Length: 281
Ligand SMILES: [Cu+2]
Image 1 (spheres, rainbow, N blue to C red):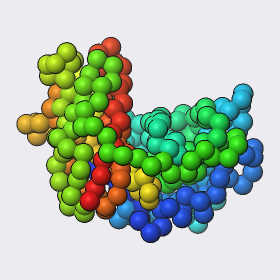
Image 2 (image 1 turned 90 degrees about the horizontal axis):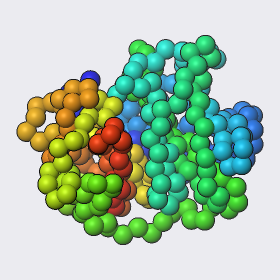
Image 3 (image 1 turned 45 degrees about the horizontal axis):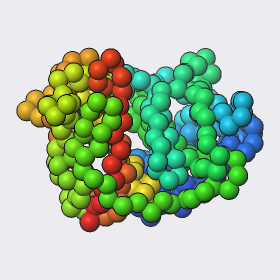
Image 4 (image 1 turned 90 degrees about the vertical axis):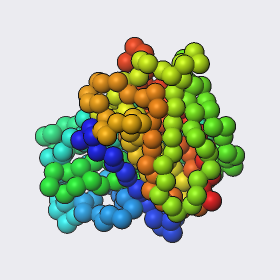
């Protein structure tokens, strides 16, 4: 698992923008029928049905609840394979792409329900991607839309290409470039420096040297790749060294502006998230 270069593509260009809204909006009501997820894995097909509902807590904190079913079944799926050390990876992105969360909901195996508290900010919409591997079915990714109180401040941010380097904690993360050739598979190098020298205290996180999530800011298409340590034929295993130079193998990304969040684990077991904005053209 850790050695595989994995690549996740979600969403179809035509369908996604619309789908985020067709999928409905959760958060305003408690419980109820729930919101059907929009299948979001490019090249795949929906083999299950996914549903999200929310339970309100204090203030703007909600508990996200996700339950999935066989496509024509009424019984919740109870058996999931562990993927990258977790049963579900939940990616939550704010509508202006300014915040990103990668969380791992608790799973109640008796009811097949994933639960995770999430605190919204006022006047924002959130895109929620639920990524699981139901046993015997394979990877499935569904997207939901979560709305906070008040009218959304902005549905689409106008984003500019970011600098190729950004600093998170003690680390400076640099991409080889921030423009990509549209629709061509390609390699993108990443380096992580600490105090001007290649960082030496990086460790694998969730079974990979790093995790990179790309979201097309117009279509909401979602791509999840795992960079490899440069020169290595595979990542160095659970908790092993990672970085400081890595290579991301990207699938052909359709033209557009992409927000990228690169997550890696550094000193003190802390997970860092480096945001970038790239243009595929
Ligand atoms: Cu990952």
